[in-house]
Length: 113
Length: 112
Image (cartoon, rainbow over all chains, first blue to last red; front, side, top):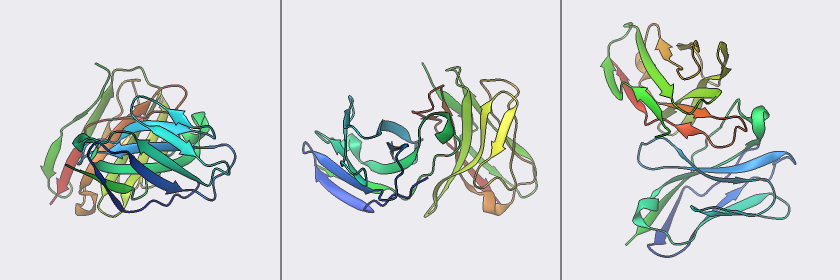
């Protein structure tokens, strides 16, 4: 799986958009970008994933650059409950990628009132 | 409610005393896995199972055993726990398509 690089920490004001960057310059053509988050010591929670097109769901938007070497997770209106560690993970999709989900150190996002 | 459950949630034990951490999911998922989380090391996969009776090692399998006799259950067995297995453990499952993994609430294990 390709390695990812994320800033260790970020702050964002409540109500503003939180933009979390992730670099994955060695990503291969058939690898997906996944985002999970972990609140305190709870189990990680899936947020979103994508291959090359931008994706949006009820939680967030994922913007992947055209060369796919980086991506940005956007929480459009951050709330205090969005304070968590956010993990960007690159891996193969489907059954081939199911064998391993490698979590790095992630970005600790703090939403300030 | 669709969920992954783990028991116990907290456990303090002593070196060498065999223990089992149970994991159960009610979503009929084929794939299940176990992770441990340690400060500064992130989550590391211990074992995974693609289906009943099909298991394989992850990144850090030493000192652990698993079994998958039923689709819904995937227990983690520590035959002879040691202090370096003190950690926060998570079980996860996913359905065919293998995109979103559902994680359990975690088991905090302390081995004295």
